[in-house]
Length: 228
Image (cartoon, rainbow, N blue to C red):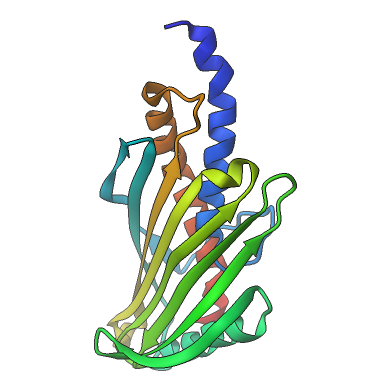
């Protein structure tokens, strides 16, 4: 293989992946260039591949997950977090709400579901993701925040993102000690650019997925930590 081919396409491939993976993780956190570290009372284990990365029919797919623990919670933690999430969804203006909230039950928990669109305006690569958003909690034993894309429209490098799902789960581990478990799981589907050889694209995609997952996880934890 001509090494100059590798060098020539590696940068645009990385740019494509950085963009689509950033979008898949940005969620509803503030979009800033600063990637903050989570507070010291948070600790996280290594990432795990729930679904090992694969490249099939030109689509890169993977699911990554990580578990963290948080110290300093109390019996009102889930109630407080649920209030913050609902206000963030309904009143922050970050999402276009087409329908909802609809009250339902999810995994035995009272839940609210929304049909929303999340827009990301990036010069040359705008994207619009319509998604089903659900959060469920009994405010005592478990909180679930689930986002599943239903339609992805993008231009430029954003057009390579085909699907993104996100799941966050929060549960008390030891209320007497104020310890909570926080688990996040992210699934993506990214189309391989026509100019990217599969042999090159797959390892770059895998490494970029890990890097962006780790950075976005830290950013997300720093964003929600004040609301625990």
